[in-house]
Length: 332
Ligand code: CP
Image (cartoon, rainbow, N blue to C red; front, side):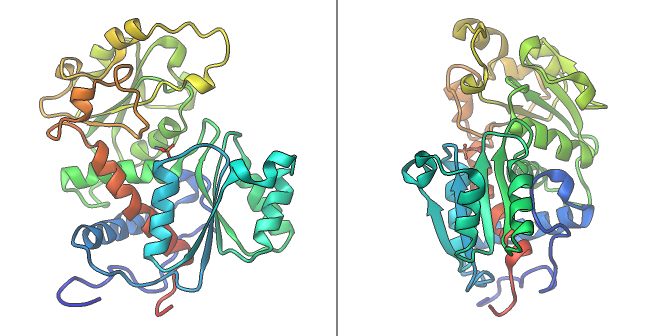
């Protein structure tokens, strides 16, 4: 690192404790602290346009996305490239998946090319654990990193969201989120982002609320200690942060009765509905956003209230931290 930019803040041999990152539960408290600290350092380096150590030089990363993605796919690609990895983006729509190739064969085929990590997004719960099992049985060394699977898990999204809140508060990982009230609103039932965020935000000490129509709230017994609200106004009361979620029409199934106008009126995050939260409350959204459904364009674009683009920027820094702590080597 040149000039007066501070050195990388962790010891060269610091690593995540688990071999694969499939869910927040794979991360120890020490892992979380290391990730937040390193993401802060990478974020600052990116902001100041400083060169970063090529901790992934000689490594190969495969992005295997069976579902569409703008943010996660591109930020993992950027993160790997900035750290010096060879990054292979699999164009699934143009691949042999569409000739009927089974997941096991696709994974074994790509793994035989010798990647160090496979970044995977897929619709079915348990895909990343299945891939990790295929790799282990084949004695293939690649590690698996979830880029979002099923309705349960999107760990790097939760990490970047929690990091964004800590950064906004000016808190360290050790301070955590004690005394911070956060509402997750909208289509929680179908959201992998909500599930991973709930686990992580509660672990960091936040008080968690869910607000949305009854049909889109999660099962109560999955989230001990959270409160559940069908009134957005009640759910937002006293909240420091509000995370809006996309209405996931593709996961609703047939027979879901949805009125855009009625939903917007009752559950959209707008400057008006945000008045129910604490004064100065900030809004997050993992994207992609449905403007005019779960959030107003005016609020999403309001730099005083919206952290949406900060989340996107932090996504690159956090994914650099994840890749570094899973694959990185000093002097590579
Ligand atoms: N937040 C998120 O996962 O966005 P993408 O689907 O664009 O990756």
